[in-house]
Image 1 (tube, rainbow, N blue to C red):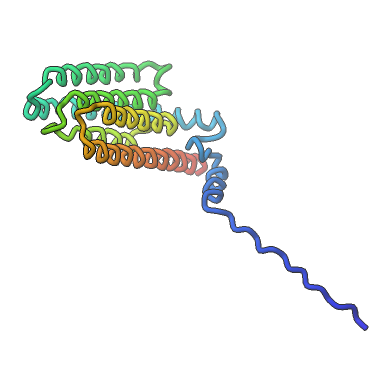
Image 2 (cartoon, rainbow, N blue to C red):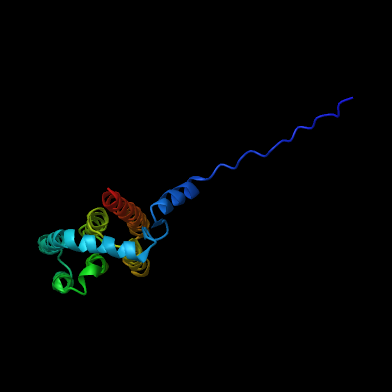
Length: 228
């Protein structure tokens, strides 16, 4: 009589989760999912050198446009603000001058490879300047300067080449400063605080995700071109 057969039931293969698949796809290209940069320092250096040769002139044009836009908001200051107008104009002049002084640094050979830090410094200075103006302007009848922060965040994350960790730190720090201003200034109502939190944090979230995606995409395109 033949011995009874036994059926071995093997557990179903565990399906990898989307995050693991995403990280694995980046690692095949030598990219870090955490930092949105090449894992190999030498490859990252070559990519940065490519940006220095091809991107820095364009970045300078963007800086000029950002600074021009920043100063052009003075028209809104003069036409809409009646209280603390002089202080607002002084703040705008000081922070705009700081942004202008960052541009000559991009011509220094040793600083050029770090032009992303200059861009991040410029957007951070711009955001802090706008937030300071919001803090001293009476909430009632004040212009919606938070739109200025939105423009700076989204434009820089979409167009400028800023290292992801640096950009994320600049966006989140600016947002925390704005949240602190809302919570510590007794002149802001609960509606101002709730809406301000919602808009600023959502702006920062979108900017961080956009910068992350753009940095990965830029490196992937460069790598494909190099391989071809």
